Length: 517
Ligand code: FAD
Image (cartoon, rainbow, N blue to C red; front, side):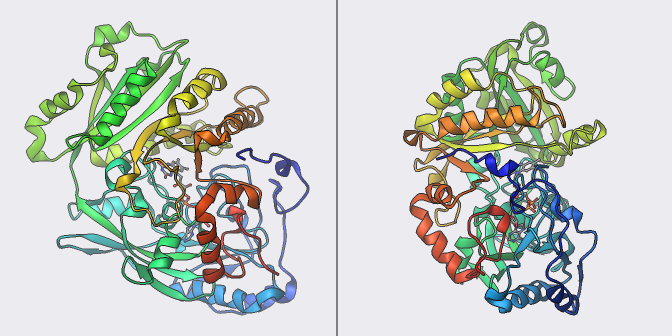
């Protein structure tokens, strides 16, 4: 089933409790590890940061944090712990930017590897017919964007927010408005360097050590630590036409989205979101978007209504600037949005891609960034999306004031299908993301408990087998739930675990396998 077991949030078991526990490894082990030499350093103090993540709900204190300066630092610590074998219970978690939601990059009493310390290799660009950049897996996507643009290039597939590491998003998928065309980020990688759970450093790609390559992509950190990645690049646009338009009819909205993702001549980015009972919505947009028809737009009200917003973008270069407005008009011409609600904006490519960072800065100023984030991400098959929308938007979600609710389709017939990522069976499915922020210590409807209760209702509904819904950024507490999540992929996933991380030391925060001891 799909229900999150909430008991474990309140349990006294240290592995699962959200309280911060101060802990130390058995002291002999402690001092043995302290004697190891590294190019970087292993720290037993000030490890609190590694017990935090963006979700702000799980705080599992590690024993130590490794700040690696070389790949051999990583293989040495893994091999050391691997060689202790069943005499130890130590686990290891790579921590990218720590933007997980439920402790996935934490390791209770284990060793956390701070991947952002790993700055090798320096970014190196390879031009030619299929340009790519080789980066350290601890690199942030925003840095890769800035460096690539200096060469007129950019990665093809993104996440909505760029202050995330390569290793972190490749361990999940990396899905955003470009995925309908290019596939998720895991489909845009030529080669990886991985240190397995046995401490072996392995280079892998579609041609070499293919099984490990596929295992690690979308592999939730279970098979090895990604240390290096080669990311596909394309010529970068300069500017972006960024467009929003509203629908009150869900079928018209999804028909248009599905039409857009399947057309050859279409936008470069296609997403959408749901708006339930918001006041002053279009007024808020005016700070960054211009209504095509200001008079009519000012008469439109969103209060008390369920609306669906199509969000699309068309990239362009300096040479394309003189016909871009016409191109956009043509692409919009067959669509069925409410005429008066078309909003347009023109921004640089960087400002478009880094758009969520602007919100981050505003929320930080108000103290509303480091709050609990009870997010819920679902992959809903096309054939279930209407039933899903009717129940979830019609009955369960009463308003969308806690944060955005994204909804957009992708077509996986154009994706690579041998990675560890779990998707619904149907080719076309929707990413539906409830990106809620809870007001700390509120006991009202904007508080954590209330949002978690709502999420549970959504998950209970989604557990109906005929809907075929899967979680993205999945989170479960029992092996049975993980088995159900992986379905027919479970046997391969668990066999791969046995070969690459036989002691189940890696990424314990995913709670899929238990450390052997
Ligand atoms: P972490 O949280 O540090 O790690 C995630 C997992 O990967 C952990 O299990 C960790 O142990 C493992 N891991 C980390 N680095 C490595 C490595 N080098 N090798 C092996 N395993 C590793 N996702 C999308 O797909 N699309 C979006 O549009 C999107 N938008 C987001 C917006 C915001 C504001 C936030 C906070 C998250 C968003 N995400 C999105 C989710 C995001 O992709 C994941 O949370 C991702 O894991 C974050 O990367 P990170 O570097 O912080 O990883």
